[in-house]
Image (cartoon, rainbow, N blue to C red; front, side):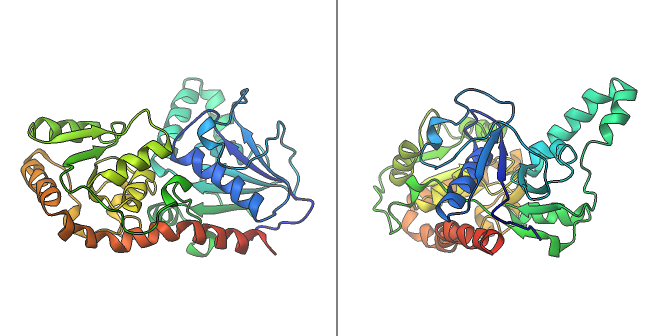
Length: 329
């Protein structure tokens, strides 16, 4: 169990100038701890940069620290992409926050390949990496149910895993009631950075449909677009609980998704199975038929997403309650 005292510093490691789900979660953590009046909470960006905090995250209250002291009182929050920091700070309490399982595997493979060029360096460096060893001052947070399954599969007991999930940007929480839709708006929203191959095949096979990529927009603009739209389609890898899936349902968009990563688990994506598809070329006609059915009969489909919307709208409260449980002794 984490031991927090007035002498502790909570230092949250984060990549600089990065506007994606993981870094936003890390800034949300700093902000929420600040508003819970937990003292000495700092962001530490690696590598260090000037103006490392993205403008998009100015909505979150944070303080920065340039150096990290390794003491038993300090608590280091380390995203799974930076597990090489675990053994670099042996005295400190460490929390690994598993925001993206796939990203961890990609980065770990990259580091090992790079190191193995020099055999001697590889063996030295291997001792510095974290490989799920049972260390007394290392704790695990799972952002998704899928992350908790991954941790259990790597020997971490269930009673050593805390479920700590972030929440959607506050811009999406302003209107929590049912949103009035223009049912003549038949556009289909998608994230062009995810599931590129699958989405391109769907677009090619449906020239009669209008696909709109969500790109080069701030949170307010995305919220406005989603509030006017009926459907969000996602066939991405989804290594954790995906932000845009959650944002879209908060604005009463129906969802059609793949079964990759966390999307395969009902605990992470609480939508009926007949809106999820294991993608293959042979399934394209079936997926397009489902898309058209949703667009033509939106009012019949949207009640199927009530459970998921309720979960998403409750995530900020659940996040706050979990942090109180961990830090407010």
